[in-house]
Length: 315
Image (cartoon, rainbow, N blue to C red; front, side, top):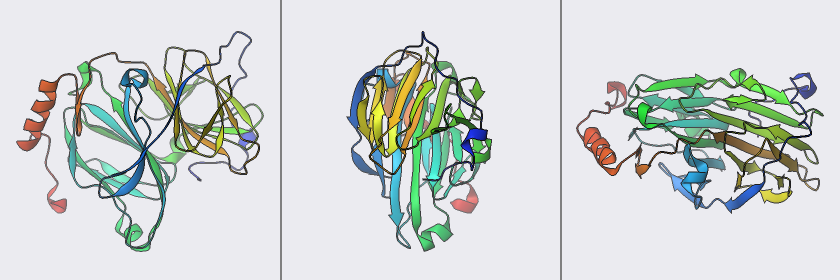
């Protein structure tokens, strides 16, 4: 799981040690993500399945895509499809994905890169591995996250952000046992490159076997930890966790993480949180709005071609 790494982690800016008054966030729940398939058949783990949306707000959906080793001819993606009312964030850890959309946005992302698409008022897009990867096969692993938009931004003009791994803010724990990659938002005063409508923070953190991390976290944000790989503990209770599990945390100032001493692989986690929007959510397929009538309008607009059209070279 390479993503973005460094030769000398101790050369990075250090996270501060928590002060004596800091409160560690307690564990509210641990759930195991069920396995399923997305798009044309690539395997996913549904990270938020069974969790109350009010605890996840402003996030509404997340898949761990893979980790899967494709044989030649096997890599799969999605077909052209619409979105309205939210943002899709695709973070690649291994493999390569190409994105195209009806607004002219798009690019190629690989290990450590992120593509951030604000669907807003409506857009069509496609995500698929490049032809050379389809022919050769290979390792494929990533995360796709849906971030809700508040009512005032539901119909914002669509936009696309291509966030290369070189732009991600890299931080070290005080002892060098953990590497924190800040993709969006702010962690301990360090800003990630992703521009967001909703105040959030996203990070991919690696904790070395036997190491621990006290991660400062905005007290006004909620906090969610998803285990991408490895095993360890979360919270002051040292709740055991392993690959494919989602932890919802309570209020506090820090997120406590520790990697198992009995494993040779590190604990890899996707840590996310944000300021809850606290608005009604109406979801159906690729649309996330505030009311059912708005969702039905989105379907009508899609059928009428008002959410964009497939570029001629891909039609």
